[in-house]
Amino acid sequence: MKQPFASAIPIIEEIEKAGFTAYFVGGAVRDHLLKKPIHDIDIATSATPVEVKAIFKSTVDIGIEHGTVMVLYNNETYEVTTFRTESEYEDFRRPKDVAFVRNLRDDLQRRDFTMNSLAMDKHGNIIDYFDGKTDLANKRIVTVGSAHDRFAEDALRMMRAVRFVSTLGFQLEKLTLSSVEANRHLLEKIAVERITAEFEKLLLGEARTKAIHLMVQTKIYEHLPMLRPHRDGLLLLSTFSCGDLDINEMWSLLLISCQIPHQDTEQFLRKWKLPVKRIKTVQNIIKSVSERQKKQHWSSMDLYNFGLSIAESGEKVFSILSEKSADVKSVRDAYDKLPIKSREELQIGGRDVIEWSAKPPGPWVKEAIANIENSVVEKRLANKKEAIKEWLKQWKMI
Image 1 (cartoon, helix red, strand yellow):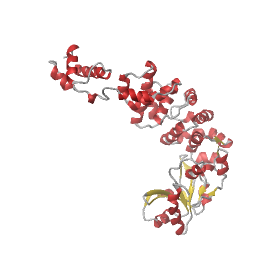
Image 2 (cartoon, one colour):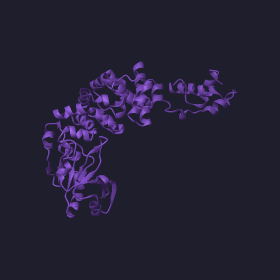
Image 3 (cartoon, one colour):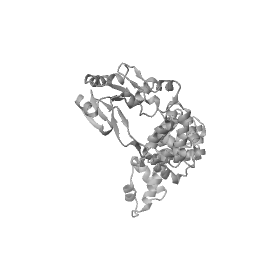
Image 4 (tube, helix red, strand yellow):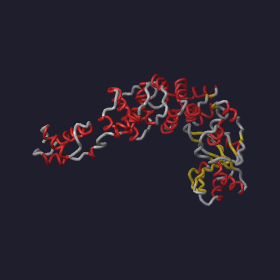
């Protein structure tokens, strides 16, 4: 058994020693069969949370009301969840109640898609009650049971379906697709933060073009924050080969594709509940792209004002819009050659300027510092105290 499953086998064996059953379940099993990297693994068991806590010395209650206990073992953490069934859902997201059961099939039956309803024992044997392996082989996304029921229970599953199209390159099965179209309005009942998490994964998927087209086809986009008027912008976004863009760069490309005016970008991104710091990063990337488009090159002041990270992102987004190869190395080389990287590196400050002048402090000091800064960055002035003093005298600023 390969890692990370091998390290978790002792967890399953301890549970079995206590007289219960336990299996690996969910996305880790799916990715194992797809030969994709596996990050977190989940374990499902017939033992109740109280029984799990009695088996292991070190546990943390992270969702015990829903059957989940975190087990600390050999300096690793494992989420162990009791087999359960779920009652009627509320808010199209959460079950009102859960009931713990002893049967694995009952637990797997409540899951979203057949490819996520697979289980694996400690020997690597796959338990497949709902033909998930066949759907994996055929690259199909199929709900467990009625698609209408699954999406009515948890409307976020529709976004997950489209996200899996992007990240796995799969197709939605016919009935699943038609149910997405019929139930898409339920997405408006889901917390924006959850929508955003799925949308960002979609934007970073290798098959994002297919997923974006599916969003337009099913009209899901009409029920996502701020996207209803931007069908054409989404289709434009789908035409770009985005390569290795990170999520802030993808947001920037989305806003540019949708022709969102600069003054409206903050409101657009706030609707998606993005953190303020990330909003400012995206705004700066978009602004840097605009400057790059105007000048067709990076000026020293652009690199200085935007900083290396924003300039690199701007170069990558600009290259996609202009269908040119991104020359990030040249951006780095030019940035490295800047005489200073920030105002703090200037050899003088406002106090020096005031001491050299007979003038009282005022707005002129800030203007003088800005002129010095610009001249140093553009290599018209050496970043040396005496040189700057003589330069100020020459221009009669002191």
